[in-house]
Length: 297
Image (cartoon, rainbow, N blue to C red):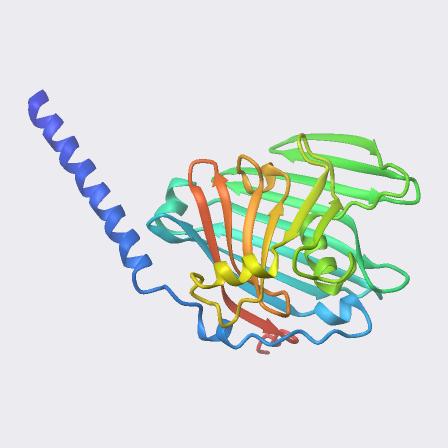
């Protein structure tokens, strides 16, 4: 085959691939512009005597995407009670799908927070955080273990057969809340009441650039103004601005803008300037609260 024909063949192949990707993207975005029926009837979680009893067996499922790929991945947040009294496990697990899954080597991220209730049972304390990332055959696990009696944190990193361990001091009076722990504490009111215009500064596991989680609730005026162009305004109550460690969501500044219901269940969010993808948008598609069904015998 001549070089000219080879060039034409490559161009045709690239054109077909590009056309296929664009076609798939538009087939995903056009019919899916609303929240699922499950999300349209979200209940307000009943606040019980303890933070664990309030949120245990709560499961949220989200889809996420960008540009012409609104369902490039999905994620699940859930909380389950462990056998030991006052102990719980919170999990965020996500995976890329479809064409984006192929391009990102079917990346999987799982964040597991081992939690215990404080004496008053009005907040969670994270005792162990596991960040597990799989990209193709690459598998990296990073474990943070907090010992508040000794005031030290043990950080273990495992990649392939390499393992490193570092011990770092925890400053007096400081409790590290990872984003998932903060998610439950904030919704329970552990940081104070949720009001329009309030700001929160939460100590978190120190990273290279960020030592705190910054959270702002938009003013009522701003919320009502922006709600006019929000497609799910019948369910939306609060507009939030969040900033976390950039490496967690692989963005430039770690900024997230999102909407929640009156019961502080996240409906819709945008992670700003994610590397390679730009703004990544996520929406709630399923919410359940109650014991998980038993497997068949």
